[in-house]
Amino acid sequence: MTNKKVSAKGEMADKARFGPAGTPINFKGPSEEAPSFIGKLGLDLMEYQAVRNVNISDQKSIEIGVNAEESGVWMTLHAPYYINLTSRRQDVIRKSVYWLLKAAKVAQNMKATHVVFHPGYYSGRGKELDLKNLRKGLSKVIDLMMANGIKKPVLSPETTGRRSQIGTLEELLNICQGLGSRVALTVDFAHLHARSGGKIRFKDDYLKIMNKIEGELGKEALDNLHIHFTEVVWSEHGEKYHVELGTNRGPPFKPLAELIAELGLRPTIVSESPLLDLDAIKMKKIYFSQLRSLGSRRNLHGKCDT
Ligand SMILES: [Zn+2]
Image 1: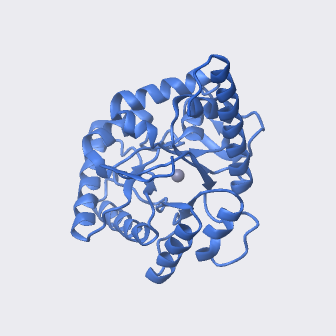
Image 2: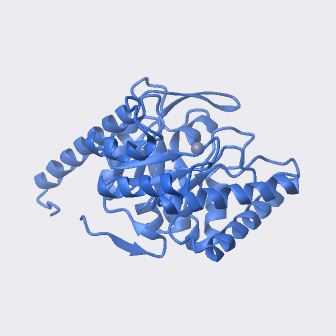
């Protein structure tokens, strides 16, 4: 299971991976040393937060990549929040393309697999036009990435948490389907939960989402899904703020872990809880206990997986 395979979407995950959004809460050093700290915590993923800007030097981003590789930690990168590929203003779209390209360059330096971003806001001119503009903007970024020799990271639009933002599951499945192997979905379950008014409660709720993803994007996309997870407080407009695991606000992590174990998925799971790495460790433990109980259930039925 430790062999790395390369698919049309780049590197495929070798196992379910867990890690924090940003540097761990008790980490005080320079960010280029954060991955080894994460590795020592028993985690194997970090999402670098370029959410306010992408002003990191080539040298520093390369050092993060080297440190991550040596520590067995995979990197992903979250691009700036102010990206808006569906704006009415052409200058905002032009800048958004530039910021995404810059984020992709930094991500390549870090050997990151995904450049996660929020696609934009509804412009008030109809969803069809917004989706068309989003597709156009992303195609432009993909062309520029190719022209600049940026091969590894995929662009990864995230399901968004506020009703004013483009980014329902259906919208993003549509976008990902049309753009091929350079684009892969990020599913933020807290955002889906908040937008739906708290509808993710049981394993079956997760299964419906997984089935939709597999139906539209195929098994490989589902197997290698990039996931954001936290519990969340919401209002009628959507997400309000993140809360730590176990507060019973939902979505619940355990049924998701159970499903990941049962389906044999290998997602990269970023903890966005206020406790970041501490809750990533908790998620990993819950997942492993689900794997163990699945193993003993299968043993009981005489069909043990090796
Ligand atoms: Zn995000």
